[in-house]
Image 1: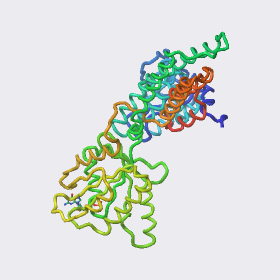
Image 2: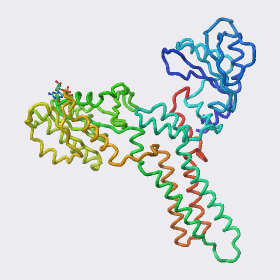
Image 3: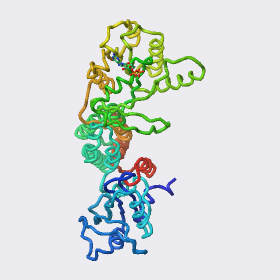
Image 4: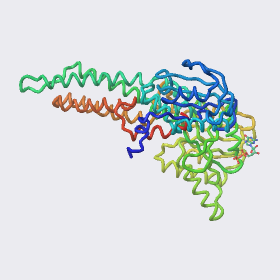
Length: 471
Ligand code: GDP
């Protein structure tokens, strides 16, 4: 409820503190405090430094426990005075040795001095509330931290630097201008004749609608680039599924990060294919249908298959098409039936280095794949072709340069566009201006939510809960 809303809590303007570097040992670890106590902390923890603290300069010294007098660590301290700081408040940062124990001690000292432990995303929330970032930029902070591919990182950095805001704000300002104009016309009507909108107003609304529609182009690709596409690799045992996975990983191997599954206890692997993140899901077991216990595993695999955006069917072309291959094909057919045929399929005929014995043309025809690729996972042949097919399966042919990949932003844009279409329809139908102005107002409000105008606490809470502590 509103009582424990992050926004209200942030209004308390107390001083918050957290370790901002990742957990574990490291060369350096950083503790950050933000709020009115920051300069007092600098003076009390670095008691050996007696001169006053200049803003934005690193100073070297010893952190000494002000109560016991014992030395905690050698460190660098940096005071950044408001408003020229990340949060817009006074910030004191302590760069200690990257020892989890030392960092924890420093945090404990800060708590004893009157700070409060920061909640997830609270530094960035304060930055937003103090006008240092708009909401779309604050959201980009998480995207930068979590980016799994270079393309995803590029998009996030662009949004952080205000790319989206720069496109959205002029439209909102224009709508507010149109609204003021319409309201003036309604107010100053002299006769009983209802006021009519002029052609210029209509043209402005058309132009704003086009700007929004342009931003919505590539919306689907945007979500895939930001969140990744799920890829199911399906096939009988020993056809080369893991070998192909490894070949696809290739030089990008270092980018593979185990990401704890959000809803289940599984670990997904992220594969980067030409800048598109693919989350690979395990579908082993679809073709193993012996006893009742295994059947449970099979059902689960089928469900995973149903959730995939892209399916890669691997067949071993050095053997004849088997009953197990047929089971895999049937599972894919069932899954695509379920998905309204939105699921893209790629077939790879693997082991192309060996003589071909398979005749799978009937099965392949039935499944209508986007592409059939001959591959050899051992000789790394056909892998580039496979990458191309995967990219096309995820993004289609178009690859727009700028995309809006955030569902909240897309939703706001869609609502704004719908309200503008209503307004334009009203204008051409001769609907009274005061009624049309309702739609224009709704359009301005919807698009304003992207940068954080008139969003309620609940929305903010939801956004900032997604952050980690220290961000
Ligand atoms: P999975 O059970 O489908 O994951 O299959 P694996 O990737 O474990 O491969 C099974 C066996 O086939 C291994 O001995 C691989 O070395 C071999 N293999 C995989 N791909 C190829 C290929 O393209 N050509 C040849 N000749 N052998 C392959």
